[in-house]
Length: 356
Ligand code: 572
Ligand code: ZN
Image (cartoon, rainbow, N blue to C red; front, side):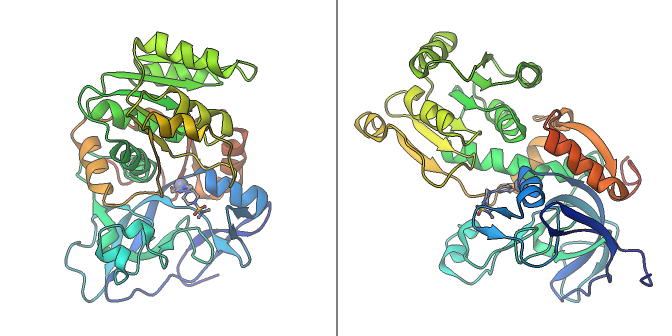
C-alpha cells in the first residue's frame, strides 16, 4: 500500500478497468495538486472501456480514465498565483502547448500537442490525487456544487457548439439528439436567448427531460421514419425553418437532417462524432448557402459555462441521474453503458463533503 491513499481507476485494455493504488503525483511549478471530488462519465470513457479505442486513439498502455471533473486544491506549484489551497475548482481537462500558432491565435483546442485527460497517451483524473495546470482550473463560487463543477466540461461542448452556430437572442434552433450533449446544447441555446428550440430523439424519456429543461418543441423520431417527412414535421412544429441546427447524435441520419432542415443561409453544426465518412446532401447545402461547421471540444468556453451556471441562467443539476463512489467505478461504467440515464457521476470523496 502506498504511503498515501491514491485509489485510481485504470483502464488496462478492453473491458479491463481496475482500481489500484498509484503514487501521489509530483507537481510542476505551474501546476496544482488536486484532491479530486466528482468525475462524470463521458461517452468516450465508455467507448475506451468497451472497445479499447475512440476514433484514432488506441489504449496501448494502462490509462487512468475520466475527464469531466472537479477537485480541491491541495498544494500549489512554486509559480502559481491564481489559486489558493482549499479552493474548489472545475478542471478543464485539455492543456495545450501554449506556443504553437493555434495556441497563439486563440484556437488552443486545435493545438496538435494538446495533453487531454484520458486520451492516449495522457492519463485522466478518476483518482484521489491529480496534478493539473493551474491556469486550466476555474475557482467555483461557494454556492456551486462540485458536481456542477464537473458538469462544466460537457456544458462547455454545448457552449462551443452554440457559439460556432451563432445562436443568439431570438434564434430558432434545431437540436438532433437528446443525450447528454444534446441536453447541454439545449440548456445553452435557451440561456443564450433562443426562443424557438426543437429537439429530437428516439427515446420519449429523453424528450420528456428535454421539455422539463426548456425545450419549446420535441419530436420523437422512429428509425423507419422517412427523411422528408421528418423535415416537414420539424418545419411544421417549429412554424418556421430553423436558422441553426446542431447534430448532437453523429449518426448519418441526423447529420443529413441537420443539413436538410436548416433554412437557406443558416448554419448546421456537427457536434456528435460518427463514422469517418458520412453521406450528406452537400449540393443541397451549398446551393442554399447553409454553412456546415464542425467543432472540436471547446476553447475559452469554461468561463461562460461557469458564469451561466453560477448566475442561475442554466440549471444543469437535473442531468445527473446516477451517483456512485470511486470504489463502485465498474458498476458506474456498466450503468453508463446501459444508457438508461443521462449523466453518471462518480464521487471520489463522500458526496457533499465539499458542497455548501
Ligand atoms: O469531453 C470532450 C469530448 N470530446 C470528444 C468526445 C468525448 N468527449 N471528442 C470526440 C472525439 N475526438 S477525437 O479526437 N478523440 C477520440 C480524442 O476523435 C475528440 C473530441
Ligand atoms: Zn467527454
